Image (cartoon, rainbow, N blue to C red):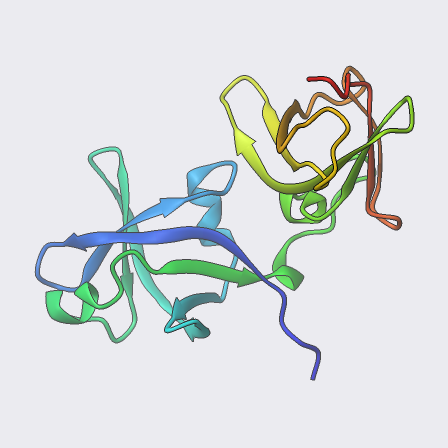
Length: 175
């Protein structure tokens, strides 16, 4: 059996009402997209456990969900703040030049001068554009521990090669 690769897509929040509903925070590009990726897995005591979504709806600018078998506030309370993941195999294949954030994590970032700036540890959404959070190598020549590099395709990000896990950027290593 192929080992599952689970990507975190959101998180359950606090309980809502007495019938087992929970608030949900989605980290997908469009909040409702989280419901397109099924089945969900919940990270319970460090293990991913499959769960079934019974229902979801909008409530005052929030999304709330009802999971199968979670029928009262006490049961829901146990799931508050639990991460929601989905198996990577359920994500649609992307066009050339499009990437999922999880594809970029762990990539080595090199600038046009050939200087290795470090490794992508996370992606940040800033509203105007996404940002690569790059952890510098321990002996960084510029004394950097971390670099924040805007993920602007063509402008800054010149090439993403997922086979070699390398991202080439037009960015000054001193920044």
